[in-house]
Length: 206
Image (cartoon, rainbow, N blue to C red; front, side, top):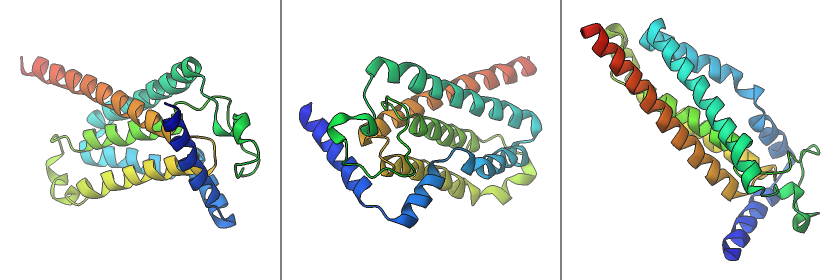
């Protein structure tokens, strides 16, 4: 266990120590929640464009729900149960971290809510996007998007996760834990959405 903690710390310090002024600014922007508002708007627009407003409204509600649940589980439950100090609050790492703009984050870091929330959105959106219910006149126009959309989403996840380690506010273990929470939450919400849609389809058929 101690060896795993040591490896976790060594990886964090390696990432955090490879810094530059331009990277500080870039990672600060990447880690900001408001930075990605245009991406969120685009993703929502694509849902309406591809699936029509009725199905898109269901999907948007599911995405809002998955963020709420993953954030609640990661920040509201796990962090306060595990109580693992962030690297920036760890006395043993005092003076060893490169701190950007004085940002140290909250007291506890396991699990990363950034990792949980971005993974939950990326995985759920990908699962919803690849469902076969598509407006007929959109099918041919969306073939290339079936590849591009998941790539963009998981690149977004990777950038967010890396930025949190670069800024020194999360260990790799925090990130991994967050990714797991996000993935599990996304799969559960997707299963719920699929059940509701199947039930609705069966009811209409009856």
